[in-house]
Amino acid sequence: MRILMFAAAGAAIISNFARGESRPAEPCTRPSVGSVVPEPAEVESRNGVLRLQLTYRNFLDTAGFLRYCYVDAEGEEAPVLRLRAGDELILGLKNELKPGLAARSRLGMKAGHMHIPSHPCASGEMDALSTNLHFHGLTVPPACHQDDVLKTFIAPNAKPFEYRFQIPADEAPGMYWYHPHVHGFTSSQVLGGASGAIVVEGLERANTVLAGLPERTFIIRDEDLLNPDAPPADSGNIPPPIVLHDAEGDVLNTGTGGGKPAKDLSINFVPVPYPEYTPAVIRIKPLERQLWRVLNASAITYLNLQIVVDGSPQSLGVVALDGVPINESGMAGDRILWESHILLPPAGRVEFVIIGPRAGSQAKLITRSYDTGPDGENDPTRPLANIVANADAPEPRRMLAAVPVPLPRPQIAWLGNVRPAAQRKLYFSERPQDPTNPVSPTLFYLTVDGQTPAVFDPAAPSPNITVRGGDVEDWIIENRTREVHAFHIHQTHFMLLEWNGIPLDEPFLRDTINVAYWNGKSTYFPSVKLRIDFRDPNIVGTFLYHCHLLEHEDGGMMGTIRVLPPDARPPTAPATYSY
Image (tube, rainbow, N blue to C red; front, side):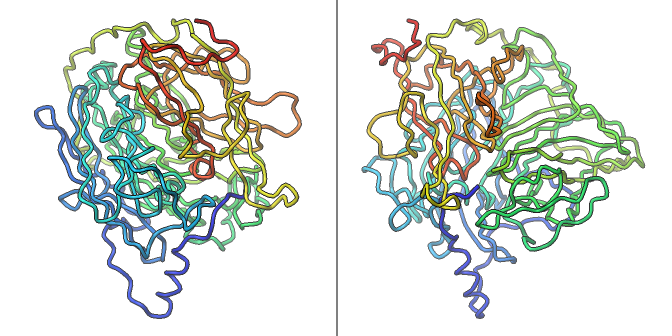
C-alpha cells in the first residue's frame, strides 16, 4: 500500500538536532522498554459532573520521533475519564502544539491546510496545528461543544475550548475513547500517542457475574518503528519470513506470521519494539479473576489477542465489545463468551474476564499474526507483556461494585427485532493517483453504491447519505481492495447480520468492524451486512463514517451522513427504501 502523503516535518527537525541545535524538553514522560505496565491516570465524576482541563502538546522524544500527548492539570498524561450514565462532562482543551514540530498533511492540500468556512467552533483551520476531540462510541450529539469534528478546529494558543455534554442516561456501560479527528492529520497524531480511554461505569450492573472483580485498563497504541532497518529476529516458533517492501519501504503483509511489522506497539505507553520485542510486565496474584478492559488505539495495526500459559492458549471471557455488554440489549442475562483469542481492529475495544496463571508459570499476553491482505501492512505474531503471578502483586486500584443494582430493562425494542426502513450498499475501493504508474500514491474511497467514487471533501455542501431519525437501516459494506478495512460510524452502534453473505447469530452491538480483503480473483467481493440504529434523538445532525485505518481515513476513505429529526420529510429514497 502506498498512501498519499508527504514526508513528516520531523525528519527536517531531526537533521537540525544532528547539527547540534537544542531539543525542546519533553512535556510527557513515557516508560522504558521492559517496564511494569502502569495503571493509567484516572479522573472521575463527582456529584454527577466530571470537570477537567487537558493541554495538548507535541514534542520530539530522545529517538527523534514526533509525539503528542494530553496532560491534565496534575501533569498526568492521557487520563482515563470515568463517568456514569447521566453525568455531565465539562472538558477544557488547550492547544499548545508547537509550529516547528507539526507533521505534514497526508492529503494533497496546498500549504498543508484547508480553509473551512468560518464557524463559531473554529478558532483555527484544518491544518497540522489545529485540534479537536472525538468521543469515540458515545451517543452524544454531533454538535458544537459536544462531538463535532467537521467544524471544530482549535488553534494553537487560543483560549481553552470547552466541551460540555451529558452522558445519555441509557448509555451502555463499558469502554470508549477520545482522540483528535482533524482530517488529514489524525493518523500522525494518533501514532504519536494522542489517545485516552473513557469508561462509563456499571458493567457489573449489566452482568452481575462481574460483581466485585478487580479491573485493569490497557491501551495498546502503535508507533513508527524504532529500528526499521533491523532484520527480523528468529522467534523459534514461526518460519523465517520473506520480507517484502513497497515503493516507500513499508513492509507488505508477508503472510507468514513473522517478518518486520509495519509499526511498533506499546501497552500503556510501555514500548515493545521490533525486533527483540522485550515484553512489558503485568503483575497479578495467582489464579485471581480480573476484568480487563483493552482498547486498540492503534492508527493502523490489528490486534489478535491471546494469553498463553506454559505454551497453551487460555480462555478469555468476553463480556463487552465496543463499549456495549454482550447481553442482547439486557435480555440475555449474565452472558460470558469464552474465546481463545480476540481480534480487535484499530479503534476496537473488548472487556473480558481472565484468570491469573499459577505462580511460577510462563505466561504471556501476545498478539497473533493477522492477514491484512497482499496490499496490507504486516502484523506478525509478537509478545506484548509477560504476566507474572505472585502473591505480593499489588491489587488493581479499581474494583467493580460488589452488590450491583441491575440495570433497568431497555425502553426500546432490541435492534435485531426492528424491521429496517432501507437497505444500502457502500464499498471500499482504491486506485493509484496516476493509473499509468502502479507505485504512485493511492487514493482511498468509501462510496455509496450509485455515487461516483471521490476522496472525502470536508467542504462538500451536501452529505453523502441522509436518513430519518427514528429509523433503522441495513447497510452492506463491500471491500473491493486487496487489503482489509475497518468500517466505523460515529454517534451510533450496529449489529452484524451477515459475513460474506452468510447469516450470523451474533446479537452484539459494535461501532467498528473489520471487512476482509478481496483476493483479486473471486467474482464476489467480501462484505458485511450491518443493521444500523438511528433511533436515538441525541444523534440528529451530521457526522462521519469511515475506515478506521487512519492512513486510509486521512487519504479520503470517509463520508458524511445527516440524520434528520423524526418528523422531517423522508430523505430521497434509495432503490430499496421501504417506508
